[in-house]
Image (cartoon, rainbow, N blue to C red):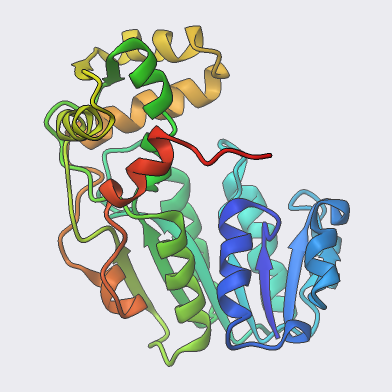
Length: 288
């Protein structure tokens, strides 16, 4: 059986959808904090098991019988290491044969503050004696595409990434990579640096938005504190605003760039260019 933590989140659902193409539903375990958020998965025949990162005993029960585990990193920044440690300990108790973990691009050298907890988690996994695969995910293109409607409204795309090149990929690309790591013959101990095949600056992205929407949009590079303030003013929680502004500064230092093409090699196709996703961000599909 293959178990996935955080299975009701965006990445988890995409991983499960990919796995369903080759793995019977009953061989997939969706580990979630609230089973009511995964009723649609249960309706497909997928095993939905309740577990809480902060309640280790629930994790031990949820991973019973699992041969492979995808540990999708917790969203609770500042608490990730303790929560991940609980999952790793439960995986060891369950004799999981392969643990795959979604880390961050170049975790060991990344200038992004986000990398610190990922580094600690990687060390815990490597010390656990569980066969593992580390999936160091780059940025999701959706992280920037979410800002497109506001950029079109105001004519400005704000950021703090400077001339840093960003090799992002679609969330679905990273999901395919995780599914591949869980189903293909991968070498235990392998660390993958996963990023998009094509890189861009935010100024280039703003120019492309202008071209496709036929509306002037300029990129305005802000100091970190000003960018954070702008995000808070736009309604984002302060914690998320801090994460995004710090990450943009990291991007300006090369933290979101990689040209090894390991993601496309793992999924067997070229990654999804950010520009291919622009149209839906510029003009979302209407719903009746």
